Every structure is written in structure tokens, then in C-alpha cells.
Image 1: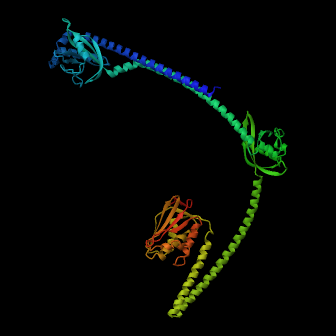
Image 2 (image 1 turned 90 degrees about the vertical axis):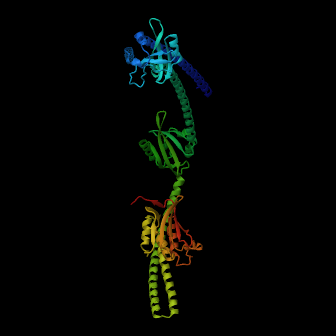
Length: 589
């Protein structure tokens, strides 16, 4: 196996040769492409001159000499004959765009004599049209009388490669005109590109083959490194497994399937059974005498063969000192060197079982005491109900006699005393009723309540003909004690009783962190700042003070809190904070 340094040097050497090969191939490909393009351009120019010579050979110099280069030529049969000839040549060759005859006037101006375009074409050049774009090559062709090519060159009609052949007068040899053929530069370049195609494709193919070779080489090296890393990881995993197996604080053994004979054990297992490794290897658990019930051996083997696993099966075993114990046995089927084995892990839960049995004993005792307390509570509630009923009956009688005394004894001083007695009796009556409400708190399990319906139900029991309770939310439910309605009844009843100027009671809600805050706001006189907490503790100076005390207790059953945050003189404001999990918004209609 190569060392990391050798791998690095090999990869660096391969990369260097790859770069050199790519540079050589690219340079050779570029040179070959340029040479091919130049050769093709030369060949195309030669072909263009050949075409131009061929066309020139069919033109009569006499017809050319007869042209004047003016509009009068339009009526000339010589012009018509030449025009038809040029149009035919243009239509016979798809690569030719323009064919034309030109002449140079004595002042040096180059003009068109005749061209291959019909008069209705936007590219048509009438006789005598100047050609100011004439290049030096074109002017030299007139002066020297030599055939030539030029371009790509751009004029008002586009970009062209042109071939020029002079037309001489037969008698004197004088240049009387110049025949030109234009080929679109785009078509010209496309032919050159096609000619360079083999060179470009060959270069790219060589590059592709080089890159494929490098990719295969690099992939093989990468796979070799992955294989080496995998082998190292396997060795490390085996070593880690051996350390975990051997040094685990839990007894572990590996046994053959289906015989159940032990193949490997760790130190903790040997410590548990008090035997040496030689005494254990090749034996079954039943042979070692560690199972309290010998049938457990076959039961465990059958279970793991059926399901390939066993999870926390309770098995009783015998410690090396002969004392019984309990273990949770987990087993997994696995294959090592092509043979099936069973990995068994034993978790000693002897102390845990003892604690559970003791816990069960005390739980039964607590349940018995709870039943006794429940029975006593039922009896006390029954006694409270009977006593409360009798007291209320007596109070009713007492209030009746006091009313009769008011009628029978009109003395003002005596009537004032009787009124105080009646007030005291009513207070006693209210306090006795409070004990019934307080006794019912927590008796039933909390439930989910539609808050809008709860408020509406509480409001229906109040004289609120001149007060308009407004609820600004819907589909909101609270998890609370079944006496939740009494909370909102008390809030609205207090607003009516103590608010004096109350005409509106509003209920809104808002989110505060992950809590929901339900707000009850009225437009009455409000609560004095010094009494904001006292109203919940029966220390406020008006009425009995039981309502809000009861409300706070009811809400507290499910962890809901209430406080008064209003501004004195601007109405009372009660904020009910509901923790997450005790509120929800539903989609019910």
C-alpha cells in the first residue's frame, strides 16, 4: 500500500502531464484550425475568381462599351441584354448575392453600369449610381487591370467578399469596365467553419479522450483510497467493537445458533457467573447453571429465531453466590464469517424489581388511605350540605320575622336596628352560599369550554338590559374547572354592582409571548390603585369580597391567573393570563 506522500507525488505528476498534454493538444488544434481556415479561404477566393472569369467570358465588350452610365441606358438594348444575363447568373448560383458591372469615370468616381437586381428591388442600383465605398483594392483593379478579391468588406448593402475581373476593349486592351460578384460574408465564413470542422472535432476528441483517461485514472485512485479507508475503518470498527464488547459494564455474550453454545463472552459476564473463559466457551447457559428456570434457554432461542430479535425479556438467573436475580435480556441475530450468531445483552434489574415491588406495596397502602380520605370527605360534604341547608332554612325564618318586626314596630330607631340585623342575616346567607361554591371547586375534572358561550351564559343570568357585553373573539376554548362560568358571571356582576356609570363591558384577547391574555374591560368608575390586589383577598371595602376570591381560586385550578390593571376613573380592566396548552382556537362552526 502506498503512503500518503507517495499518493500525493503520483497525483501531482499525473496532473502535471495532464496539463502539458492539454496545452499541446490545444496549441496543435488551434494551429491546425488556423491553417485549415487560411487554406480554405484561399481556395474559396480562387473559386470566386474562377466563377467571375467564367461570367466575364460570356459578356461582350462591345455591349459594355456601348453603355453611357446614365439613365439613357435604360432604353438601350445592350443594357437590357446585359441585365438579363446578370440576373440569370445570379439565379443559377445560390451563393452569389450580387453580380454587377462598374466603370471608373475620368474624375475617379466609380459608378454602376448594370446589376443583377430587378428595378423594384430595394437593393437595385440604376445606371450611373456612384459607389463612394470603393476600396483601394477596387480602384487598383481599374488602374492595373488585374483580377482580384477583397473582403470581407462592409458597404451600404451589407458585408461581402467580392471578386473582380476587368473587361477590356478587344481592339486596344483598355479597361472599359469591371465585373464584380459579391458573396455574403456570413455564407463565406460558414464554409470556412465547415472546412475547419474536422480539425476542431479532432482536437476536442483528443481532449475528451485525455480527460476520460484522467477521469478513469483518478476514479481508480479514488476507489483505491476509498477501499483503503474502508479497510482501515473496518479494522477500527472491529477494534472499537472489541473494546466495547470486552469492556462493557453490562454482561454480553455471543452464542451459536441454533445450538446456543457460547462462542464469545466479555469480562463482565465472567464476573457475573464467577467462571473463567475456558469454563464458559462452548457451553450453554443451562450447562453453566446460571438460569433459574432451565426452560428459559429454549424459550429465548425460539423467540430470537422466530423474530430475529428479543427486546427486554425478563429472565430469572442465579448469581455466583447462589442468590436469585432478575435480568432484562435483549438478543439480536447477526452473521459473522458466514455463520449465524446471537448477540445477547443482559441488564441486571434485581434492585429495580425490588424497588418496584416496594413501590407497589406503598402504592396499595396510599390507595387504601386515599379511599378512606375520600369516604371521609364524602361524609363531611354530606354533613356540610345538611348543616348548610338547615342554617339557610333558619336564616329564612329569621329574615321573615325581622321583616314582620319592621311592619309591626314603626319606631325609626328600632327600624334602623332591624335593618342592620337584616343586613347581617343576608351577609351570613351569602357566606353560607360561598361555602357551597368553594366546596365544589376541583370536584370535577377540568374540561375545554367555548369562552364565547361561557360569557353569553353568564350574562343571561344578569339584569343587563342597559349594558351591552361585547365579545371580540370567536372559536376560543379554555381548559378550566367546570365553574369557569361563575368567574365571568362575577366579573360582569361586579361591573354592574360597583361600576356605577357602566354602559359597556368588552371582552378581548391578545397574545403575550406564548400565553393568551383575555381582557374584561368596562367603562365604569374603576378600582382605586390601593385596592387592586385587596379585591382578590376579601379586604376591599364594598360588599362581601367573595366573588373575586372565588374566581381566582377557580382559575388557579388549571394555572390561569387574574389581575386588575385598569386606570382609576376610566373603568375596571381584568387581565386573565392563560398559559400555553390551556387555550386553543378551533375551526368548529
